Length: 193
Image 1: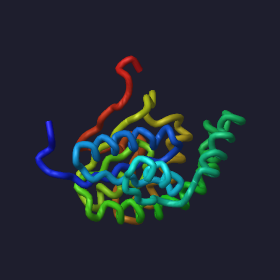
Image 2 (image 1 turned 135 degrees about the horizontal axis):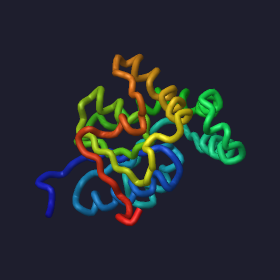
Image 3 (image 1 turned 135 degrees about the vertical axis):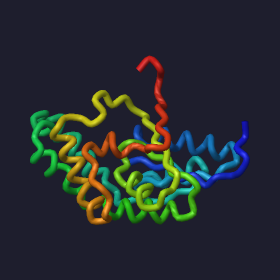
Image 4 (image 1 turned 30 degrees about the vertical axis):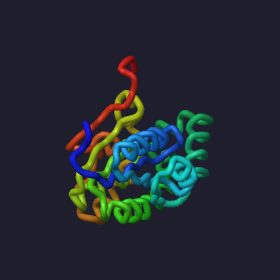
Protein backbone atom coordinates (compact mmCIF):
# COMPACT_ATOMS: atom_id res chain seq x y z
CA UNK A 1 0.00 0.00 0.00
CA UNK A 2 1.59 3.31 -1.01
CA UNK A 3 2.48 5.95 1.55
CA UNK A 4 0.29 9.08 1.20
CA UNK A 5 3.32 11.36 0.74
CA UNK A 6 6.93 11.24 -0.28
CA UNK A 7 9.35 11.09 2.63
CA UNK A 8 13.01 12.09 2.75
CA UNK A 9 14.57 9.21 4.69
CA UNK A 10 18.10 9.27 6.09
CA UNK A 11 19.46 5.73 6.45
CA UNK A 12 22.62 5.27 8.49
CA UNK A 13 24.76 2.74 10.24
CA UNK A 14 28.39 2.40 11.23
CA UNK A 15 30.64 -0.55 10.60
CA UNK A 16 31.59 -3.00 7.92
CA UNK A 17 29.82 -3.73 4.65
CA UNK A 18 27.59 -6.22 6.48
CA UNK A 19 26.38 -3.41 8.74
CA UNK A 20 25.68 -0.97 5.89
CA UNK A 21 24.47 -3.16 3.02
CA UNK A 22 21.02 -3.88 4.54
CA UNK A 23 20.42 -0.12 4.64
CA UNK A 24 21.35 0.13 0.96
CA UNK A 25 18.74 -2.55 0.20
CA UNK A 26 16.13 -0.70 2.26
CA UNK A 27 17.02 2.59 0.53
CA UNK A 28 16.61 0.98 -2.91
CA UNK A 29 13.14 -0.26 -1.92
CA UNK A 30 12.14 3.11 -0.49
CA UNK A 31 13.24 4.77 -3.73
CA UNK A 32 11.26 2.21 -5.74
CA UNK A 33 8.17 3.26 -3.76
CA UNK A 34 8.69 6.94 -4.57
CA UNK A 35 10.51 8.13 -1.46
CA UNK A 36 13.80 10.07 -1.28
CA UNK A 37 16.32 7.90 0.59
CA UNK A 38 19.77 9.16 1.48
CA UNK A 39 22.49 6.76 2.58
CA UNK A 40 24.45 8.54 5.33
CA UNK A 41 27.55 6.51 6.10
CA UNK A 42 31.33 6.55 6.16
CA UNK A 43 32.89 8.14 3.05
CA UNK A 44 34.10 4.73 1.86
CA UNK A 45 30.47 3.76 1.06
CA UNK A 46 29.83 6.55 -1.44
CA UNK A 47 30.61 4.35 -4.47
CA UNK A 48 28.19 1.69 -3.18
CA UNK A 49 25.42 4.27 -2.81
CA UNK A 50 26.08 5.76 -6.24
CA UNK A 51 26.17 2.28 -7.82
CA UNK A 52 22.59 1.80 -6.60
CA UNK A 53 21.48 5.27 -7.72
CA UNK A 54 21.20 6.57 -4.16
CA UNK A 55 21.89 10.01 -2.78
CA UNK A 56 24.82 9.90 -0.36
CA UNK A 57 25.88 11.96 2.66
CA UNK A 58 29.30 11.22 4.20
CA UNK A 59 29.27 10.72 7.97
CA UNK A 60 32.53 11.00 9.86
CA UNK A 61 36.00 10.03 8.67
CA UNK A 62 37.01 6.78 6.99
CA UNK A 63 37.63 4.47 9.95
CA UNK A 64 38.25 1.20 8.08
CA UNK A 65 41.81 0.89 9.39
CA UNK A 66 40.70 1.53 12.98
CA UNK A 67 37.84 -0.97 12.68
CA UNK A 68 40.17 -3.58 11.20
CA UNK A 69 42.68 -2.98 13.98
CA UNK A 70 40.00 -3.43 16.65
CA UNK A 71 38.79 -6.68 15.08
CA UNK A 72 42.32 -8.07 14.72
CA UNK A 73 43.28 -7.12 18.27
CA UNK A 74 40.14 -8.74 19.72
CA UNK A 75 40.58 -11.90 17.67
CA UNK A 76 44.31 -12.11 18.34
CA UNK A 77 43.97 -11.47 22.07
CA UNK A 78 40.46 -12.26 23.38
CA UNK A 79 41.50 -11.02 26.84
CA UNK A 80 41.41 -7.49 25.41
CA UNK A 81 37.62 -7.82 25.01
CA UNK A 82 37.33 -8.37 28.76
CA UNK A 83 39.56 -5.47 29.78
CA UNK A 84 37.89 -2.07 30.04
CA UNK A 85 41.24 -0.29 29.69
CA UNK A 86 42.21 -2.37 26.68
CA UNK A 87 38.89 -1.75 24.97
CA UNK A 88 39.02 1.99 25.66
CA UNK A 89 42.50 2.16 24.13
CA UNK A 90 41.34 0.25 21.04
CA UNK A 91 38.30 2.53 20.67
CA UNK A 92 40.30 5.80 20.90
CA UNK A 93 40.18 6.52 17.14
CA UNK A 94 36.41 6.00 17.22
CA UNK A 95 36.02 8.29 20.24
CA UNK A 96 37.83 11.06 18.38
CA UNK A 97 35.49 10.58 15.36
CA UNK A 98 32.11 10.62 17.16
CA UNK A 99 31.77 14.46 17.30
CA UNK A 100 32.31 14.69 13.53
CA UNK A 101 29.89 11.81 12.97
CA UNK A 102 27.26 13.69 14.97
CA UNK A 103 27.90 16.94 13.08
CA UNK A 104 27.70 15.23 9.68
CA UNK A 105 24.62 13.16 10.49
CA UNK A 106 22.82 16.14 11.99
CA UNK A 107 23.53 18.16 8.82
CA UNK A 108 22.24 15.30 6.65
CA UNK A 109 19.03 15.23 8.71
CA UNK A 110 18.19 18.93 8.40
CA UNK A 111 15.62 18.35 5.64
CA UNK A 112 14.68 14.78 6.61
CA UNK A 113 11.29 13.40 7.57
CA UNK A 114 12.68 10.36 9.39
CA UNK A 115 16.01 8.92 10.54
CA UNK A 116 16.50 5.15 10.16
CA UNK A 117 19.58 3.77 11.88
CA UNK A 118 21.35 0.59 12.82
CA UNK A 119 22.28 -0.18 16.39
CA UNK A 120 25.95 0.69 16.04
CA UNK A 121 25.64 4.25 14.68
CA UNK A 122 26.54 6.19 17.85
CA UNK A 123 25.35 9.55 16.50
CA UNK A 124 21.79 8.55 15.55
CA UNK A 125 20.20 8.64 19.00
CA UNK A 126 21.93 11.95 19.72
CA UNK A 127 20.51 13.47 16.52
CA UNK A 128 17.04 12.32 17.55
CA UNK A 129 17.45 13.57 21.13
CA UNK A 130 18.61 16.99 19.88
CA UNK A 131 16.15 17.46 17.01
CA UNK A 132 13.18 15.22 17.88
CA UNK A 133 13.26 13.93 14.30
CA UNK A 134 11.21 10.71 14.08
CA UNK A 135 13.65 7.85 14.66
CA UNK A 136 13.57 4.17 13.73
CA UNK A 137 16.16 1.57 14.71
CA UNK A 138 16.63 -1.43 12.44
CA UNK A 139 18.45 -4.38 13.98
CA UNK A 140 20.28 -6.36 11.31
CA UNK A 141 22.08 -8.73 13.65
CA UNK A 142 21.26 -10.93 16.60
CA UNK A 143 23.13 -9.37 19.46
CA UNK A 144 22.59 -11.95 22.18
CA UNK A 145 22.86 -9.96 25.41
CA UNK A 146 22.47 -6.73 23.52
CA UNK A 147 25.53 -5.00 24.79
CA UNK A 148 28.53 -7.30 24.81
CA UNK A 149 30.85 -7.91 27.73
CA UNK A 150 30.97 -5.43 30.62
CA UNK A 151 34.31 -4.16 29.28
CA UNK A 152 32.83 -3.64 25.81
CA UNK A 153 29.85 -1.80 27.31
CA UNK A 154 32.21 0.43 29.32
CA UNK A 155 34.18 1.23 26.16
CA UNK A 156 31.01 2.11 24.25
CA UNK A 157 29.91 4.36 27.14
CA UNK A 158 33.32 6.03 26.88
CA UNK A 159 32.65 6.68 23.17
CA UNK A 160 29.13 8.03 23.53
CA UNK A 161 28.57 9.59 26.94
CA UNK A 162 31.23 12.34 26.99
CA UNK A 163 29.70 13.88 23.88
CA UNK A 164 26.14 13.35 25.16
CA UNK A 165 27.05 15.08 28.42
CA UNK A 166 28.70 18.00 26.57
CA UNK A 167 25.37 18.45 24.73
CA UNK A 168 23.45 18.30 28.03
CA UNK A 169 21.90 14.95 27.11
CA UNK A 170 21.64 12.29 29.80
CA UNK A 171 24.26 9.54 29.67
CA UNK A 172 23.27 6.06 28.50
CA UNK A 173 24.07 3.09 30.72
CA UNK A 174 24.28 0.71 27.75
CA UNK A 175 24.36 2.74 24.51
CA UNK A 176 23.87 -0.33 22.28
CA UNK A 177 20.54 -0.98 24.02
CA UNK A 178 19.53 2.37 25.51
CA UNK A 179 20.48 4.13 22.27
CA UNK A 180 17.75 2.36 20.30
CA UNK A 181 14.69 4.26 19.18
CA UNK A 182 11.91 4.55 21.72
CA UNK A 183 9.49 5.08 18.81
CA UNK A 184 10.05 2.01 16.61
CA UNK A 185 12.54 -0.85 16.54
CA UNK A 186 12.43 -3.28 13.61
CA UNK A 187 14.27 -6.60 13.52
CA UNK A 188 15.40 -7.52 10.02
CA UNK A 189 16.58 -11.12 10.20
CA UNK A 190 15.36 -14.63 9.74
CA UNK A 191 12.78 -15.77 12.28
CA UNK A 192 14.97 -18.88 12.73
CA UNK A 193 17.76 -16.75 14.22
